Length: 465
Image 1 (cartoon, rainbow, N blue to C red):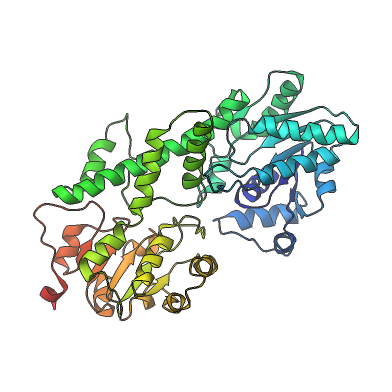
Image 2 (cartoon, rainbow, N blue to C red):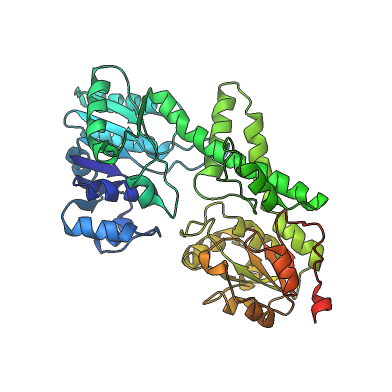
């Protein structure tokens, strides 16, 4: 099938590459010409394990191409996937300007029956707005073409997107029940047939329900995270171990273990934005999403927990202190810095006069870009933010180690080397990677999230010297 993917960002590239990989003729469109030049030159503008290999083999095979020619891209595809960004507006609602701009382009250049697939995460009612926008453009041209707008939300985890796309646990498709909708459903069924050979994974529903499903899924996962963080903060007060609690409740099959890890807050391009958008959409309909408001508030507060622990240990004035920061991306296996907890933490430490030496296996370049924006107009703070070539180098002469992202390389480090390189053997662990009693036995002062285990005496820096 001939497919056009409008938007060559994270969702668009994964979608286009994976659909080309099963034999489709895919053209990825983006108005960002430098990005298209990178892709045509053999590069890739994002970090996602395995994606470059899929892109390379399909580009070489002639099944995947990249272009900034809007007219050609619209005419190419019998199915047009809208996979552009929907960032948060000032009021928390999803900014649909890129989605509607894509719809206008489709209406201007439509040359026959088209299936328009909303792949971007969009609020309920967006498909109708896309349809209305296309019809206005067609009317302005004085032309009539049959088309259908389908909702097909993505459920990709950054760092595992190729696996998620090629082996999905579900494929959600929302179609209208009119004649164009039936034609669209048939084409969607043909398109996704290769992913349903083992068993049927496709869930068909109305368009509004499909749009709602994506937001509901992310809101549920965000709720689980904030729920555990709320419990972890209380566990610190009463001396309970949140990891033991997690295992205790996760063993209940009605609950399960996924997304129950306490930490320093969620980030990324999906959970923060989608929770805010669902809250705002509900407000527009006169409905108060009180639980999700609490989820969002808990998460924002959680990003300050490591700072609070550091201030409690070293004082509010951190002038002259140096902190090693392991992990910058919001999660491992990505360079995504959007809403990353590391940004809040670093800004808080720098504002108190500290020096921060950071390391991340893949996100340093993106971190340099976002911190230049975050610290704009703060030259002194920017001067105290440095980047290490490796995780061990970041430790040299630091007063403490702070862990924000759970990269594999951080999970089993040389603790003797950590103690030798740090001024004082202190670790603030925002992802609960280590066992408190093990750290205690090794003479490392260990501050984690909700790991206030009874009976474990945390040694101070002075007591181990």
